[in-house]
Length: 107
Image (cartoon, rainbow, N blue to C red; front, side):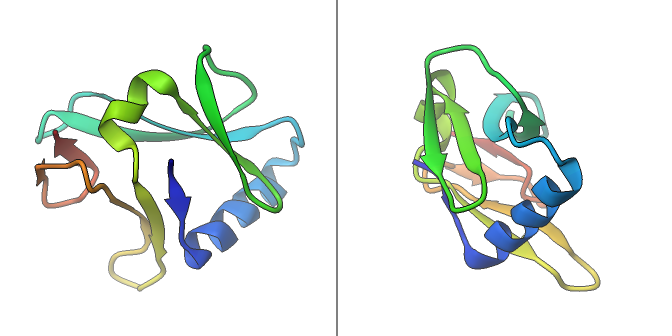
C-alpha cells in the first residue's frame, strides 16, 4: 500500500484540478534505470494493465500495478514546498540504497 502525506494530498488534488479528467488516476510505480538501479514513476493515467491495486483518497485515486508492489509496498509519498528543493519525495522502506536526489533506489 502507498500512503500520501497531507502535503502530498494537497499537491495531487491541485494537479487533478488542473487536469480536469474525472476518469484519471495517479499511477505510482517503478522501472529499471537511475543511478541506484531503479526509478520511481508517477503519472496521471486513465488506465493501466491489470492486475493493480487502487487506494481511494477523497478527491482522487492512486493506482499501483501489482508487478511494482514488491519494490514499493509501504512507500510514503510526501511533498516538499521549500524554495530550494520543492517537489515530491519518495520514502521507501524497501529501499536498501537510494541516490542523492531521492528518485532512484535499489532493493
